[in-house]
Length: 66
Image 1: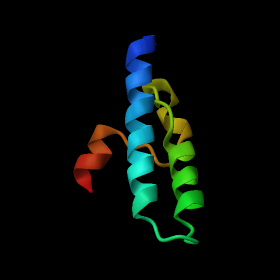
Image 2: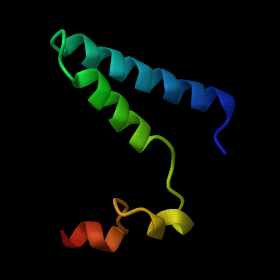
Image 3: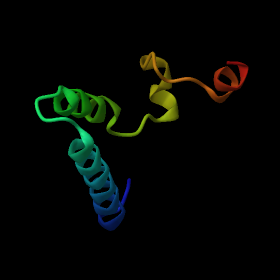
Image 4: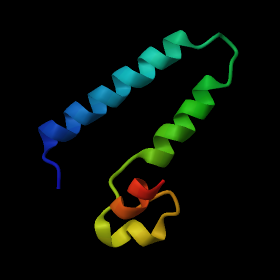
């Protein structure tokens, strides 16, 4: 598990990144909803045991062969 201060730092980093991207987007664009979906879909850690359940996860061997 990640301790509280590391988790807070991670959340602050993501929050700052999302804020910077949102400031670059044009008013009325779809960037907000697309960015939200991207952040939600990528949030969390994939453990080695869970790897086979996620189609976007690749083992180190597969990454090197691409």
